[in-house]
Image (cartoon, rainbow, N blue to C red; front, side, top):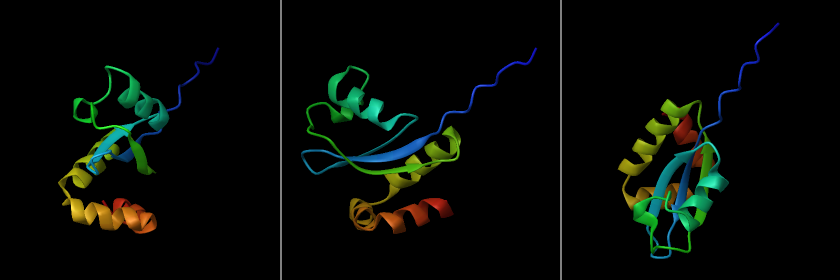
Length: 100
């Protein structure tokens, strides 16, 4: 008898743009589910309440949860102008993330 091993979840780092033009960065295994939680549930981030509509402007896969958390922290530390410049060139943003 063989035990089935569950596949590790695929973690993602994502950036949302709020109606007030602010940016929110988060991580999730299912970005669409998490976006729905932000929009319609008490499980969404408090920062996003009252800031809708929300738009997903960037999403990139990470190696694991630890890597996703590190990427999230680094993105959150960037000045908004740097984030905006990277969002205009998603390929460059992904290359930068790969270097982290």
